[in-house]
Length: 316
Image 1 (spheres, rainbow, N blue to C red):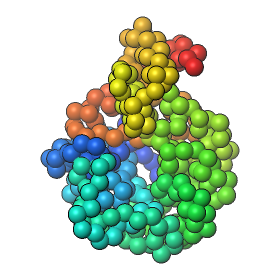
Image 2 (image 1 turned 135 degrees about the horizontal axis):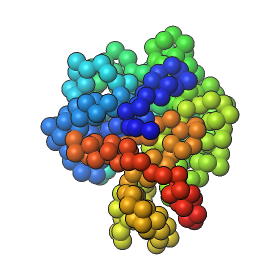
Image 3 (image 1 turned 90 degrees about the vertical axis):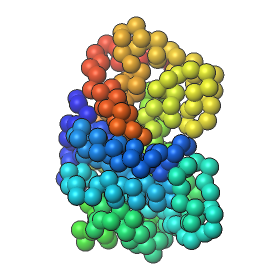
């Protein structure tokens, strides 16, 4: 399997097995220049990456605006964005998570039908596009937002899908329980699951993945490096955006030890692992430079013998 292999989704869309995540284009934790943002996207397209994901959340619109410039005149891609956070005017609104954030707006959660329509309209304006292929319902974690998403956001998106305004509806979260509800209670097409089906955390295999398989829902795995520790498992490495616990670090080091014996990089294994489940169609990887795109796509293409996967399965 190669990073640029195309996989057909249930909606008929064909996307590359390796997708480009663009939270980095909003300056996630560290600022990125316009030049690096544009070259990152350009290199991904040149490498055969055809799936790109963004969200209003990423830099409060900065990621979407940068993508507008990076993708201008291009046609060889499928794009997803998200609803659930509207951007409303504010004064000097800083953001500790996104260094390149728009300080003139603040996020407000809104999963109403009107909020969905407004969010997509404003995303299309920032992206300077007429449509996006995929729209995810983003992080409805609180119970009130779960109910509103199922009763209001999803029906609004379903109407748009029926009208041909979008091609696929999904839900994107860092936990598996709520997306499993969506699979069972709605007719969503996709789930973007971040950090819950990785070499370190396979909790989504208990509920989400079996449900997706039974209902024919496509799963995209994000956060497959668990925010860094599966790229470089050393003391102080981050797991889910916080310092990794001794238990997690110990498990990561066990994984790395097995891979080191076989001369396989831990990044390669982390990128490829989720695709071993039949419901997972692609992985989504954030990159902040052209070199990171090259390094990660090459790691994705590294051949890992089945015997190594069997050895890794013994780690607990």
